Image (cartoon, rainbow, N blue to C red; front, side):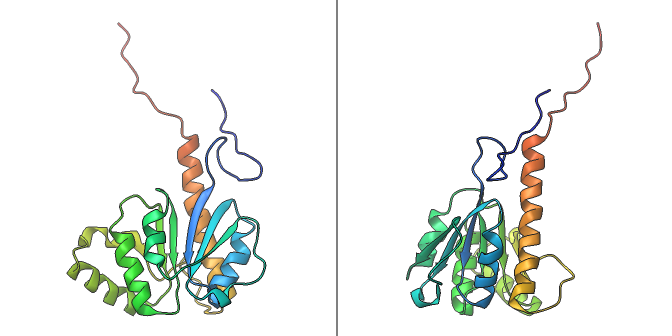
Length: 186
């Protein structure tokens, strides 16, 4: 049996593309998150309309996308992407959430916000035709449970931990050995 080998730089199975993360929002949490994502095995598209909110320098795996049409970035994201919504505007968050939920091929969709925001968004998504049984695919509040600190760096750590869980599941699936049913001897 051939062992599963990971490329040392990307952390992905040999020959596989690294995790693709699309981060909408260049506010305080976005900045803290990009700092951490810069050290993880992923490619990051960092999206915001406010060009002046981006720093002059970003980690090598981060690509800045200053655009007035972030919905187009949702549509162009590759299958299997992780989409993170944390903009400065609830209306934009909802527009992005609706666009993301129209897709069925993302690996992860997380949005910053409270449980109240989630309930409001769920109701509005259902009104716009999103199937109720798919709402579990939207992670809001974002990040691993149990971290209640609202500091940008704490939220970033919680989100990165959740993304690492997604990456671990991806690695486990890539390394899974197919199991064949035992056949009766004849």
